[in-house]
Amino acid sequence: MRNVNAILLLSCADSKGLVAKVSDFIFRHDGNIVHADQYTSKADKLFFMRVEWELKGFALQREEIFSAFAPLAEQCKMKWDLHFTDYVPRVAVFVSKHLHCLHDLLLRRHMGELGAEIEAVISNHEDARDLVEQFGLKYFYFPVTQKNKKQQEDSELALLEELKIDFIVLARYMQVLSGEFLKYYPGRIINIHHSFLPAFAGSNPYQQAYDRGVKIIGATAHYVTEQLDEGPIIAQDVIKISHRDAVGDIQRKSRDLERIVLARALRLHLENKILVHGSKTVVFE
Image 1 (cartoon, rainbow, N blue to C red):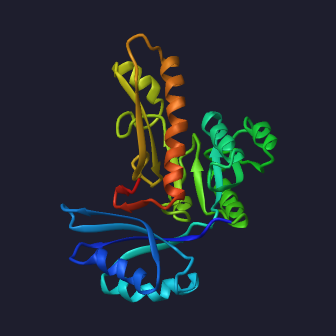
Image 2 (tube, one colour):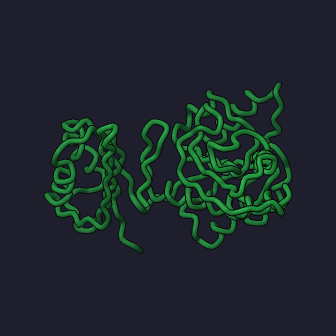
Image 3 (cartoon, rainbow, N blue to C red):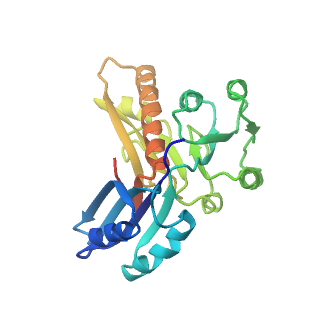
């Protein structure tokens, strides 16, 4: 069994000696740091840090770390989270009729690459049922209309609570989640959008790109907020297109990109390498 590490993510107002203080806390308890990264936003005068250390040989038990670090965090007025590398998050994937991102996630899970356990696939259509059940996973069908949207979201939330879901992936789920739904998973819903945001937000970005005659198209993975397609961006990428590409060609190229960008964003989230600050993210790759 591989060794387990602790990961500390923190942010606070910038001041001298922050790196030393955090490192000294780990050193004083016989910790061995294996990864450390930090960033200072000069404009906002804010400090961000990710530090990972081995629990093997560490003088504190994992359940003691939180209370031991709390005085330093309070002194520096830090926002902070503590994670452990042996925890496997429980994920629900939401999908509609476009199945390419879902298929990629299922294959990555099957090959042991995902770093999370897919506990449920939830859809407003039946199209993905056979695919999902071939992988031995649970499939839940919640058809959504304007009239039953709140009722269906309530049922989905009850299911997510029952399954103890940690976070949600919107793998081309073509429904807008309500603010009431989102408040149960703040910073814990990742969406893949089929354009290079903020360009071509909203519906049918393939057609928008074609009509505008752009020479590159992109894909964006971001955290979901109440502002449609405006959540903090985690990962993006682009690919070249030309005047020869019809809308179908753009769509095909974009699908390839969406798979890669969503997988990258999930890896960063699962490895606890992201700090959210307002509408932005600090990503320690």
